[in-house]
Length: 86
Image 1 (cartoon, rainbow, N blue to C red):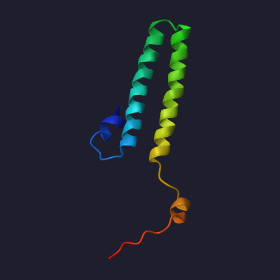
Image 2 (cartoon, one colour; image 1 turned 60 degrees about the horizontal axis):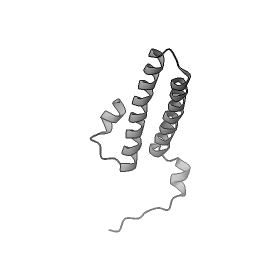
Image 3 (tube, helix red, strand yellow; image 1 turned 135 degrees about the horizontal axis):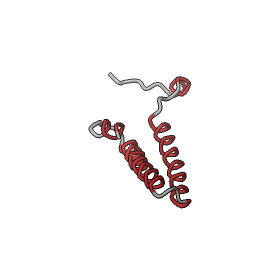
Image 4 (cartoon, rainbow, N blue to C red; image 1 turned 90 degrees about the horizontal axis):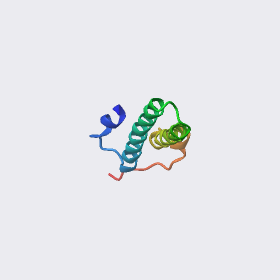
């Protein structure tokens, strides 16, 4: 939730904002599933849903990491140079 709260007012790309919202929503669902699973004495259906939620949350985090990562120096060197017209 700290990530979501800290990026609410930043001017970021809508795709990044969407992925951050997905991460926040999935993390909230994962916490809810975990608590429900423990309070219900670990039924198989809730345990399986919790495991599937963990996989989905991991996928969202990998997508977010890939989306906002810094480009490598080799990639930056391979791009054509942009010259400003004076």
